[in-house]
Length: 349
Image 1: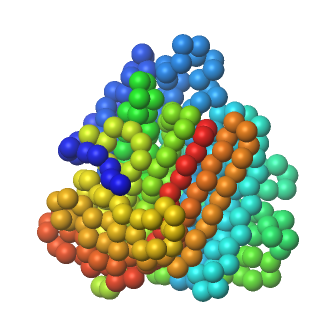
Image 2 (image 1 turned 90 degrees about the vertical axis):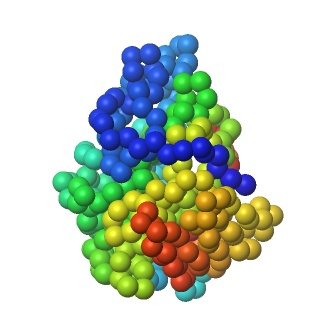
């Protein structure tokens, strides 16, 4: 299984995402967001008022600590919205997640662009807020009924303007498209509570990641995503973002090594795994030899939903990455048990 790309086009000049006819103005990848996400110009459906129901928008935050992975998401899928959180314990293998499904995304607010504004939801019981400050992201969560014990978090993710991200915009089919920004290795501080247990979060050992997505997909979609945020043996922050599954990646893949806050762009990466047994080791390798990785899972999270119009099935594996990746300057970066995840996702949405 593989992505299919011929080259990598870096975008450096600001522009609108879409022109007045709904066509992408630029296609490629960027180290920082350079496009204004003017989704009001989308023109993929003959009856424009219906388009609101097919545009997808989400903000996903993850946090890797030495003992846990915590994630929180706000998603506007058009005819429905979702707020969901999950918590995993690496040592025991325990995990739990809860989801609120909201008709027509009522109560979910998501900003136009990824660099500023606040994403939020508050129904008087559950409160989720993601605020973009100049040099940080502030994530605030209160979910009193989580697993009968309650979960809360107050986190500050240090994200100075010079910290690079893997930002892409690619066409899918017709005037459908995918605009995405993924940020790895964001130092985090603050705290989480689960019931009576309190977990301090320290930036030296806890790193966050952001998946900010906007676009229009085919109703039936499939993708694979692999990600990790941790530290190399010499103390440098070390991240991976790899994936494939949809869209025209001839101008850009989303594949990157992230080293001390700088993106080292990777081209095609081929995945080998067993969809009948996701717990078997996965292989990730690139034809140009820059990537030679084995991912060994130790925990499988399965999330399935059937909401008539919206169905999804996710197999998200948490495990350790071993192998090598070459940086842009030829330095061989060795991964020796870097904790991360890899997932396969099928959706009708």
